[in-house]
Length: 336
Image (tube, rainbow, N blue to C red; front, side, top):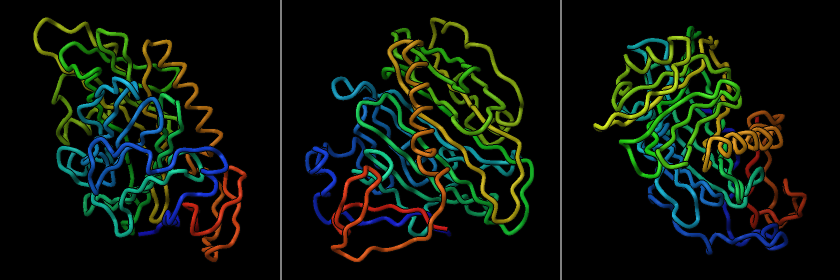
């Protein structure tokens, strides 16, 4: 296990928060589904749960619009990794991912990169020998959060023909019988909409989408079906209008194939997004790109630096440009 962040402990109210007029942690509502394994990015208009096992605990659970109605928008959504139907790691139905030592989910507020910086690390056990370091970023008043992944081959041997992607069953506005799903090829974004105007999507910001497949509930909730959807190049047409009987739509979207030598890293960038129309969803998806670029891909594209631990009480420069006191500001620094 290779740790990528130094996670400072918040021992008091950050000086940067006081100077910037930010919101202290004590003023925040608790996570929507409190758990040791998942935490909620809750500063934006979309609230999203992230976890340290690829979606098994938190299911990348989304709520929108918040505050206010803050309606549930997700049934299940999880990470997929594999190079065969018998070598498919998923974060949902089999729960293949396990938290690494020191990889427990954390959300630091204020973050160095965003208003809330998330970190987690997990591996796929003995499925393939892949370790995933997950970084997430959320900003106040945004209709999206960013999630970046560093996928490292720790198997000791080259892994060929790999695919990475997501399974998404987004029950928009809490409904599951009247949804449609479609793909925006210009943005690399799969999305689901209800008969209301609410649209919820997943956009890939780094990684060229090679497949988007949609269908009914449980069409892809097995290793063989998920791998077939990931590894079959192409893009399904918009899902037909729901019939009068029960219909619960889902999609699988993925990138591949790629090879990883022992110790090599593949990087994937994503955004979970919501909007009150297709036009609004697209505008928010475009704003997510701007945030991705400005934040160096939620940190995964930033130049790596040697880890250092500042002496308690020393003055440090935060990403905001404000000065803070070590031990009082939450510091998260990348290392080689």
